[in-house]
Image (cartoon, rainbow over all chains, first blue to last red; front, top):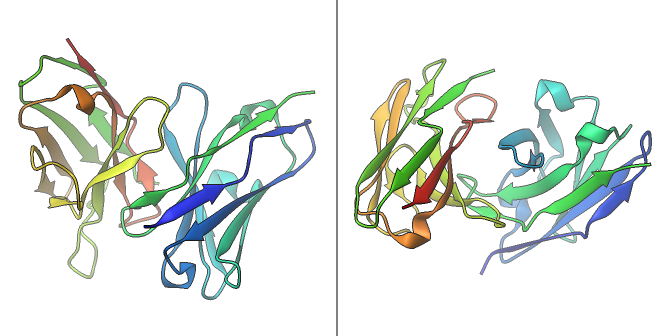
Length: 115
Length: 111
C-alpha cells in the first residue's frame, strides 16, 4: 500500500521559513515526480511545483519560484518543501502527491502564519 | 499558464440522478506524444483529493464505474451516472500536458 506521511502542523511568524516533509512508503520516489499543492482556507487547489527525486530537477509555478524550494532524499524516500519569507497569505494546507494523476496524496500539513 | 474553467461551480443532485461537470481549457491539452493529460479529482470534506479519472477517460483502480470522463482538445466532461451520497464533495479537473493547473472546482451537494 502506498502511503505519504506528511509532517505536523506548523506555526510560523511572518518573515521566517518552515520546512515540510513528506515520507513515502510502498513506492520508490526515484520512479516518479513529487508534486506539492496548496489549498488556502476555503479555496481550491493550487500547484506549487514538482521535483524529480532521481536527479533533483525542479519546476515551479511562476508565483512560487521565490517562495518554495523543493528537495528530496532518495535514501529515506522523503521529499521536502521549504517555504521562505512567510506572509499571512501563505496560511494554507500543503499537500504532497506522487504518481500519474497524481494518484497518491499525503494527508496535508497546515501552515499558519501569524505573529 | 493554462486556465481550466469548470462549470457549474455548484451542483445539487438527488440520489440516483445523473450529473455532468464541464472543464474547458484555454489551450489544447493534446501532448506531442499523443496523450491528453487531463484528470479528475474528488476532494471530500476534510480529506485530501482522490484521483477518479486520468488521461481523460481512464478509470482509476477502485473507483466506481458510475464515474466516466470524456472529451478532447480543450473540452472535457465528467459524468456521474447515478449519484450516491458518498459522492458529495468538490470535483477538480487538473491538466499536466503543460505546467500543471487545476480547475476552480465544482461542489456537489446532495439534496
